[in-house]
Length: 276
Image (tube, rainbow, N blue to C red; front, side, top):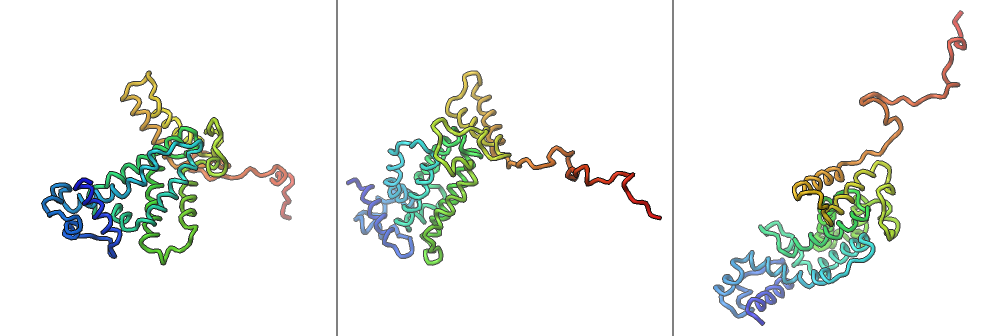
């Protein structure tokens, strides 16, 4: 075992046993039987050590994701990914809190890789027409909610006691990002089409799908600059809040809508009684 690996494993063990989720570099040096100069030469400072500990501890979890073959249903993969993320946090509370601590000036590499894996699966969903916002925005929504739920479960277990809370939040966030067909039925073999989306969401779904397909296989007819510009436009369209069509939407802007009344309900001048 290398000196660096020994220091990391000792630090991870001390962190897991720590009652307050913190460790000192002196305790790590004593347990690893190395001097402080060796530790600082390997990791720079305490934050560098803690960031390396997070990556070391999270690596086993990410290894399963790296080797995971994408399934036919990307939405199911994303549901499973949410659940495994929460399970890892509950099993490693101190490590998970450290990973998401605002005191870490630079995000650990494992956190960035986890976000990339999430975005990759969302790109697959978008390419099938199952996403009604851009994969980038969906990744921000899902990751922030996933991390928030996990942090509450490890930080306030006495308050967050509902065993279905994580699933409820997961399904609510997914419902805001995916089309109704993606939420309630298996993914068709040929993917969902934008015309299957709920009224008023067809254009964002189509834009998200076209943007994902464009990134998967950029057309040779476009230059790199043109492809990037088109991708930006499609992302804007995909993330524009949809407004479902409603009766009277053809009226002039700003004009109040007056429903058409049946002819029989409108009295004619001849039928209007005169006052004597």
